[in-house]
Length: 181
Image (tube, rainbow, N blue to C red; front, side, top):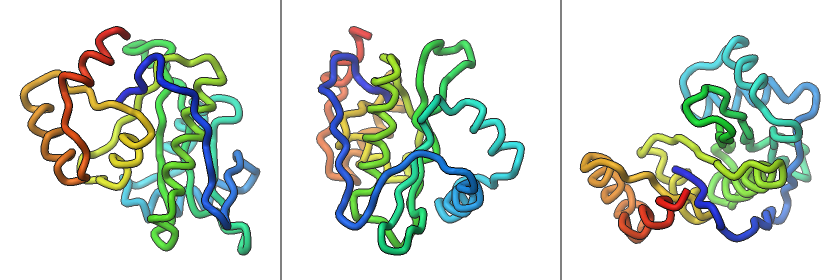
């Protein structure tokens, strides 16, 4: 999914009882817990180090429950330096504590990451997610990210995903909006 050029400014909001903050020393352990409970592939020190090395300044966000001060969500703004898409930002590793899902934290975190990229001058922002992560897909669609539908296979896949999340399936509109980029 990609952020369409010329999209409106982002104004992140945070659900009542929570705050969004950037990384603080010691957040690594809770981050790893969130990755485990977000059902991502196993993480270890090497994977953590490789991803942290790509985080842009001020681009590692955490959702915190204000009463308990517990970190309950996270997302990273990752600089893409692979050369495949130079000068591109990747939204990565959005996850929320299972006990705090459904409250808008994913949207808040994704909004904060998108705004950080835009404030840093990135105009090409992308993300990768699996199609079975329907709540995450819905968050990204709601925020304004568009699917890349460039083959018959991806068209069928996105038609199914949109049906499952109750989102209009508009590949021609998406292609037109992304074609100018």
